[in-house]
Image (cartoon, rainbow, N blue to C red; front, top):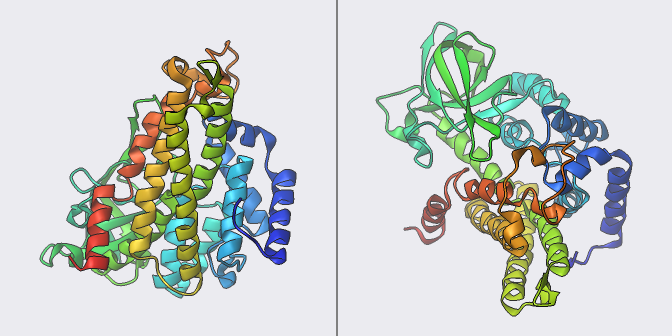
Length: 398
């Protein structure tokens, strides 16, 4: 790492490295490094390991279970975890809902939901996107009508990541049809086991069941599950999205992917010499590395601002754009480096236990799936085109 750390920060880095050496299960790290698919149990196990150490919600205030880290500590931790092959924490409870509840939730909601996020007792998913309401999130049509001490919810959400594992979903719902789009939305916490909730799988191009459709038919939700005020949910939704977009940037995972790409480029031969010495390929490799170094610095500034009580603004959109472009470029270069070996797609090779002979270098097996799956990065969390509009409004006033 090119950053200059203080002696105290280096000591913390050593502590993180020792923790990863001692506690990160080798079989899980092997799956991550080889690009294999993780099971629900793998994700739950790592969640529990981090929670036991008190390092799961590293951006939460100490009073709610966070470790009280500063910006550089968070940066070090996330980068070292990525380089060690630690799985990415499922973000919906820890990184998205948690900050919203801490800032806008009632004391009763904090006391009830935050410990359950940390313990893993609740697995959350996100109910934002709908058919026709993806990047135009303010046009959500799922309704919630107050009936006594319950809301009655009807509608549909889509692209619900890992919704088939979740027992809870936080939703944007329309509670006022007369108000302008952004003013009539509320933020509601819904039990997925409630009568009237149906989850249908969406199988992606690579054969994976990662995303879902979720349907609500006369679902009764306690009014106590409303976060903040009715019809003010757009404010909470935007606050959550700043955390989601910063998280999507995935700086640590880009660092790890770039290291792997360099190893591939040093191994693959072209015209009798390593691909890393090919002028055209090495120029693209150098450019993506420079972009990543610049993004590291921006990421540190954003983390520091949040730690100081600020809220990520246009910076989170910048990170989302550049972070997703960098990750897509790295996966594209890795696939290009392997040439024809990266063309075959054998879904079974993405699971632990596959023992058929490899076609070409082992690193080639997951590249096609990773390349196509990473196409989504510039779409979800608000498409990159929408992020550019947000930046124009917030910084240039356009």
